[in-house]
Length: 298
Ligand code: SF4
Ligand code: FES
Image 1 (cartoon, rainbow, N blue to C red):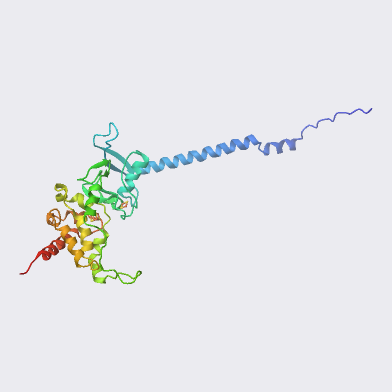
Image 2: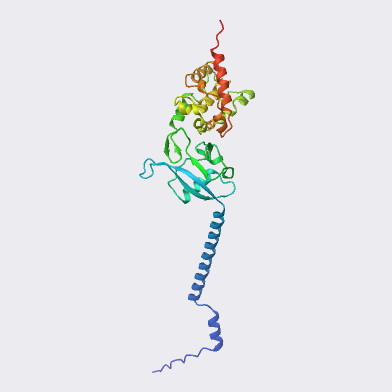
């Protein structure tokens, strides 16, 4: 039978104790990591506060029309004020989006392309019809007042009912019509360079309805075709590829009681059109065409 003698535990030497203090324990490492993260958070918060303070120094004041017929307490039209940090190149649409995304998600307005192409964000900015995405904040006087387009029914906040405008546009049959098709199926229907130049500006319409909203005549006569629809009629009536009989039909549409003769040459439509279409000029030219069309020589 053998007897096992328990081994004697050695006392730690001084050198070993020193090494132990140099190697951090797992707990120490965790605490250090926590301290590092806390410092990082503090620095981030300070940076955000500094950014906010800088923004406060350069903030714009927006007064936005609010109305919601479906929500109790919001049925009475009012203006809400939003303070939005200004950034270089900011447009009215940018400011509205900031207000909506930061302060009030119920703020409602139309927009899509953000580059003056879709025509969905025409509004009344500081008393003038403008495309919000094309209007620089730096060019406006503060406080900036944003309202829905006048002379239209408001659906909610800055959104108006566009149905009437579309009806007027469709009334002039805004599409190409011709009796003379080219022989070959894939053959182009050529237009002369001069004719293309003539109608060029009229093709730029983006159906924003700013011109209609600015027109006093349209405001007083709900059946008036309006500058945009007449411009659309011009675009096709002046297109040499449509042929004389179709032009005749177009002239009949625009010289009706609520057509071109209602225009009083006030130029308001031309002034507000964001695509710089010479609307009044086009209306006057169609008036002349209508007169020529009706002249009879016996
Ligand atoms: S004519 Fe000009 S203002 Fe009128 S709908 Fe077209 S783009 Fe807008
Ligand atoms: S958002 Fe499309 S025209 Fe302004």
